[in-house]
Image 1 (cartoon, one colour):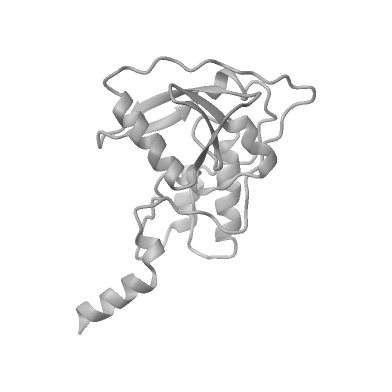
Image 2 (cartoon, rainbow, N blue to C red):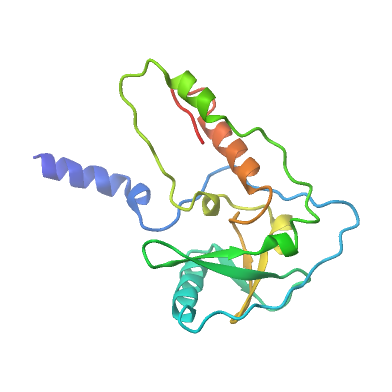
Length: 191
């Protein structure tokens, strides 16, 4: 009996247990550039041959999930930095410090202090932790911001449709988004 109910529950909420990256509903990220910015187009950096298959596999996965879109041209292009994860996979980051971060009006939103979080949760009896898998990639970007998130790879140009690691405003934009989602819930904190 219990197995049947578990299977029904899992089937009813299959999207929560999917291996695909989720997507925040109803909120989109936005990048605001300084006045009179000039586009920066950087060439792709060489990728070690040993990493190429993993980088290509990750690019294919991100494209299949709609997180990135191949584009033929762009005024903006950021070289990628592949980061090897503990699992052996690769996380593709953009080296935005050489392109948009210098020209970005960095979003200012207060990030919580760990002491404040612990103080607000004191007195609790049961705690749980939810770690959102590749959290930034779960936030769609507004159409006008996507052009700034173009990466240059050995396979050509891809535009991110979602927020990603390396963008100076990402932590503040993400914290604001999660605070909006969790607004009004007691005993819940996000860091």
